[in-house]
Length: 215
Image (cartoon, rainbow, N blue to C red; front, side):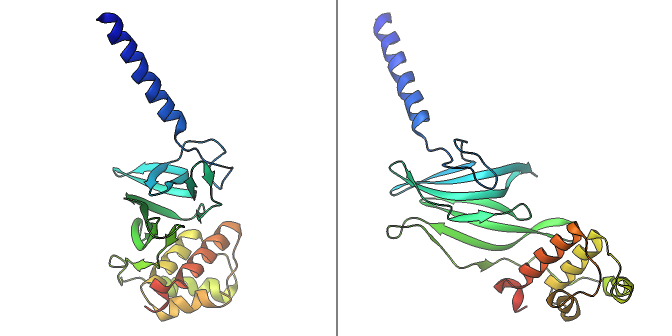
C-alpha cells in the first residue's frame, strides 16, 4: 500500500512540474522584461494565453504595472507586442475570462487616480482586440491654485521651472483650465531641461487624449 502511495505521489508531482514548465514565458526582450521571464500576469484565452511582461510593484495593497508589453500565445506561438507601456505610465490590470482590463493611473495632486480604462479581449474572432478608452476622470476635479501666477516669471524670463511646478500646471490643465491647457499646446516660452521636458511632453500628450481633449 505504501509503495502504491509513493508511486502516485511521484506521478502527481511530475505532472505538476510538467504543468509549471509548460506555462508560457515572456517570448523576447521587452521594454521591461527579458526573454524567458515569468509573466507578471498570465490569463487563459479561448486559444491560448495573454501575457503581461514587465515591472510590477505593490502599492497600498494593490499592484501597479509599468514598462510592460502584452503578448498573446497560441500553441507555443507568440504575437508581437500587442500593447506597450513606458516608464512614465502606470496601470492597474484586472484579468477577466479571456482578457484584461487596463486601468491607466495618473498623478493628480499628489496621488494616483484613474484616467481611462481599456479592455483587451481575446474572446471575439481569431485575434485579440483593444477597446476604445472609457473615461474615468471623476476624481480629476477643479481646485484652487496660484500656479498660473507663479509660473509667469519663468515664462517671461525664459527660466527653468522645477518639475513640481510643471506637474501642478498639468494638474490644472487636466481639469479643463483653458489658460493652463494653452501653455501645453504651444511653445511654452520657459526653458526645459531633460527631466522637465519629459514631464512636459507627457502631460501634453495626455491632454490630447479623448478623455481630456474635450473637457
